Structures are given as structure tokens and as C-alpha cells.
Image (cartoon, rainbow, N blue to C red; front, side, top):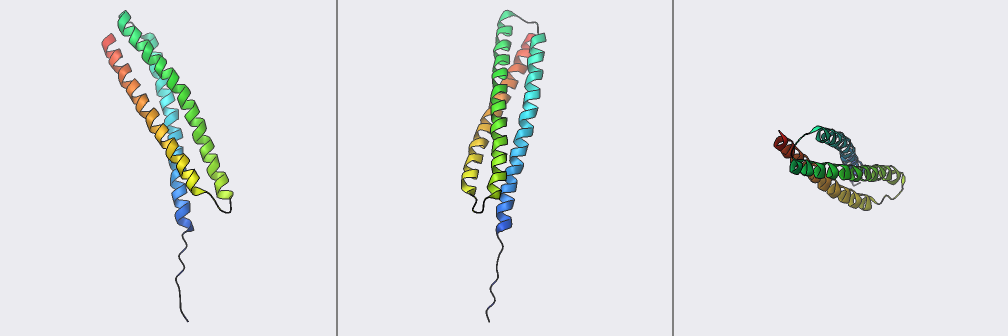
Length: 133
């Protein structure tokens, strides 16, 4: 009689998807924090008194932050839908994990691009605030 070891790999799939789900939750939290920070920067910009040239740049940055908040809202919605699609995926008998992972990678790229844009605008705003004083 031969014994064969059966390896249960189902936990590997669940762990991988769990990590993606966790990353999605972290993204949602980050977006929430970015929106709070950007609104705070916009409010500070409204209180600055500076030369016309500096104020023009500050308004430009504040407008960029407002636009970015709209992009944050869209990204937040897309990530939330992505999380829901994981719930639906796990209910399937033959889940298409590859499609979910591909969508996750696209969202990751968008998240990183918007994160970079937010940080750039934040740095510009702080430079303009320093120039105003």
C-alpha cells in the first residue's frame, strides 16, 4: 500500500487574496487621510496673505488639491467596488482569481500615481506658505 501526501493549497489562495483585501483596506484609509489633509491645506491657503504672485501660485495648488479630491472620491469608489468583487469572487465555485489580481494591479498603479501627485502638491503648498511669510 502506497501512501501519498495530499497537500491542501486552498489556504495559499485565501492568504494571497486576504493580503490583497488588506492592502485595499489600507488604500481606503490612506485616501480618507489624504482628503482630510488636502482640505486642511486648502483652508490654510485661504488664510494666507501674500504677494499677488505667491497668491496666484497658492490658488493654483489649492485648485489642484480640489481636483485631486475628486479623483480620490473616484478611486475610493473603485476600490470599494473591487473589495465587493472579492466577496462575489469567493462565492464562485471556480473563481477567476487572475482577473481580480489584474484589476488590483491597475488600482495599485492609480493609487501610487495619486499618492505621488498629492505629495507633490503638498510640497508645493508648503513652499508657497513659507514664501508668504
